[in-house]
Figure 1 (cartoon, helix red, strand yellow):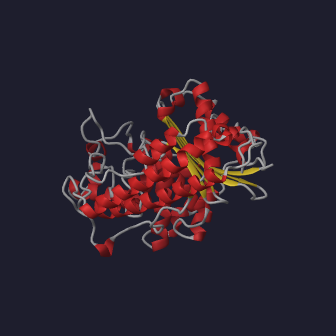
Figure 2 (spheres, rainbow, N blue to C red):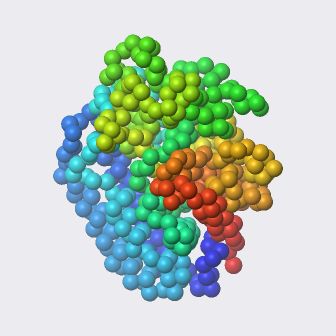
Figure 3 (cartoon, rainbow, N blue to C red):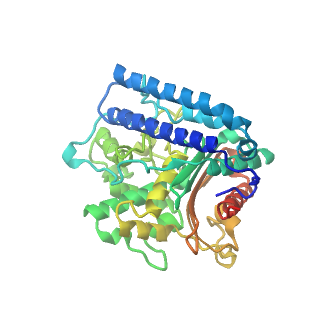
Length: 436
C-alpha cells in the first residue's frame, strides 16, 4: 500500500525492491542468531556466557552480508526521488538493524533478569507458552514510511522521539516496521495482557478451573475486570493464581527463594518461547483489598535496592507480537484467542465510553478512530510517567487489519492527551488508503 501522505507519482524502483528483499534476509539471519543465543541464555549459566567462536564467525558473516547489501543498494536507494519522498531519513533504520536487531554475542548480561533465574524447573514441570517462535513477518518500506510520518508528527509536537517505541504490523500482508521497538520499558498495565494469556493457558492445560475465565455482561469476574477495567485487585489475584504465590505474609509458608522462583515462572513461560528478557512478575499497585498502596514484604524485596529497583520490563515488539498471536488465533488455542480478543474489544461510540470517568479511549488510540467503521481491540498502560498502548484495528470488510503498538515514556507523553489519537488517525488513514 502507498502511504496517503507520501507522493505516489514515482514508480517503485526495482532496486529498492531488491534492497528490501536483502533487508528481509538480514532480519531472518539475525533472528536465527537470536534464537541460538536465546537457547544458550535459557540454560543455567554463570553471570556471563562465552559464545563459541563458530557463532561469532556467523555473526561476522551476517555483518559482512549487511555491508554488501548496504554498499550495493545504498547508492541506488538514496539517489531515487521515490526514496526521498517515502523515507526522509534511512540512517536510523540501518542503525536499528545493526544495533537493536543483533544481540551482544560476547556477553549476555543478567542485570535485568528476575532473581534466581538460573534455577530452572525440571523438564517435566516446564510451563511454556505454546507459540515457540516469533512470527515470520517481512520488513516493509511502505510501513516504515508510516513510522517515519509518526516520528515527524511527534517532533512537530515537541515530544522526544528517543522516549518513543513503535511497532506496526500489517496482519493481512504479514509485514512490519518499527522504531526502537526492542527497548525494554516499564509497561504499567500492559502486563495484564500477558497475565491474561498465561491464565488462559493454565485453564487450557487443566491446571486451573474454567470458572476463572467466566465472562458476565456485568463484568463482575476477575478476568473481565483485569482487561475491561484494568483492575489491580483482579490482577493481583490472577498473578497469585497462575504462579501459586501470595502477597499476604502469613500465607507465605515456603522460603523466599522458592516464592521468587514460583513468581518468576510467568517470566519463563514467555522467555522460553522467544520473549527474550521479558520480566512481568511484579504486581501493579495500589491493591485495596490487601491494604497496600505500595509493595510490601516480599513484593518489596523482589524489587531490590530502592536506588535501582528492578521493575517489570516489556518491549513494544513483544507486545505487538502477543497481540498478533491473539488476532491470528494462535495464542493458547483458537477458542482461547477468540475469547481474549473479545475481552480486548472496545466500543468506540462516544455515548458509551464518555459515560465512564476513567476509560481506555479518551487520550488514547481509540479516540482517533471515532466515527470510523472498524473493530477495535486494545490494552493501555498509563501512569504519571508512561502512556502505552497496543491496539488491533480491523475494518468491517476485513480488507485492512493491522496492529499498532505505541510506547511513550516520560511525563511529556503521559500528560499529552492529543498525541495518541493523532498518531492513530494518521496510521488509519495511511493503512486504508488505496494504491493509485
